[in-house]
Image 1 (cartoon, rainbow over the protein chains, first blue to last red):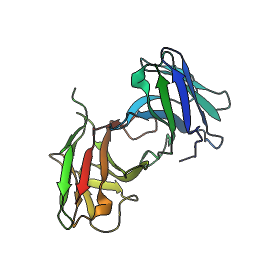
Image 2: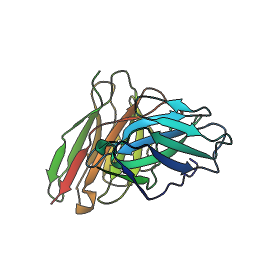
Image 3: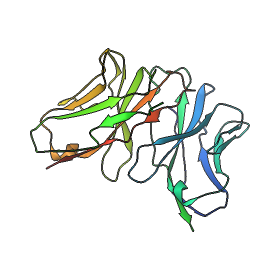
Image 4: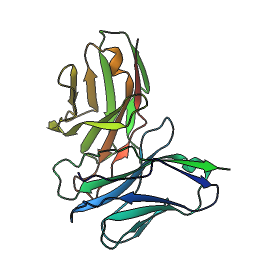
Length: 112
Length: 115
């Protein structure tokens, strides 16, 4: 799996939008961009994924750069419950196992 | 539709005992993954199984650890002769499909403490 780079930590205020960046300059054409998050003392939780086009779901939006070398997870209105470690992970569309390789992620703090 | 179930949620063992961790994937999911999170560390892949088959065990320690996913029943991660360094949170995930577009759904984890 190709490597991703994320800031170690970010801060946000409650009810404001949050943009979490991820760089993946060595992404291949078949790699999907996945985002997971892990709240304190819980298991990881799937957030969103995409291949080339921007994606929206009930949790977040994923904006993918045209060259696919970077992406941004957008939380439209942060709540205290969004405080977590956010992981950006590449998964090979044609991989044999598609195990997730977690990096250090971005620790998001949300201030009231 | 119930999510991924793991039990027990907490397990305490003394050094040298065996630990058995169980995982029931989401209904219809035949792909199961086990991950380990040591204290203050990130999640590490251990093993990937499909029904009755181990597909990728590249993250499993060479000794004392084994996993199975029988035709009937939950997937089992077994740790023999536990040592203090095995204390960690063990997470199971399941997936409907193998391709990169399929997400993994995680269970709440089993927190193993070795005394």
